Image 1 (cartoon, one colour):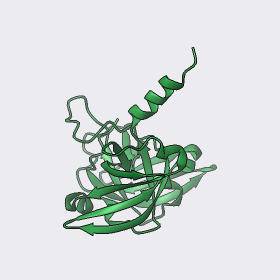
Image 2 (cartoon, one colour):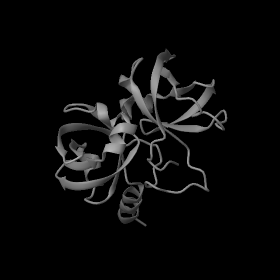
Image 3 (tube, helix red, strand yellow):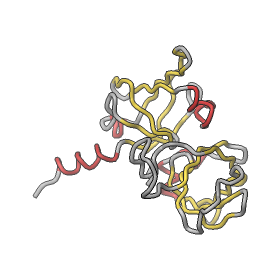
Image 4 (tube, one colour):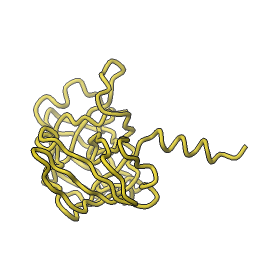
Length: 198
């Protein structure tokens, strides 16, 4: 589990095709991998991946075809900047919202405008995900926990403050860019309970 509060950005060093899927190698800032153990989960652009080996400055992780189908990781290449977060500890503060790292699908930036010191993004979500997005609810974009400002059909808006723009790869987004989306896990469970037939 994660909070959606990004700890650092990293850089894709390699995306190696391995018997039909891929292995990523990610460069990280000094100290990011301290106290990380082999097999631990790390969120990469919002995708929960398992560290299969690492050095002081990089780690590798396997990416399954299911993950490649559901996320933008199929399009990363050397030099791509990614958001990173280590798994939540039971003693950590939950400053964002509960994020599983199980990306639900791919959204697209439709437009962005400045609003004083912040940036307002309008994004579109696939119809099957849009129904879970509610105004003033939570959404995860590339692993970043954000509050939904408004919803209009399959489109929704979020406001990004300067700190978040500076500390994440959201500063690279432009109209037409695709992003990883994870909807609020509570909405999915409520729907499942309501639709269950006993």
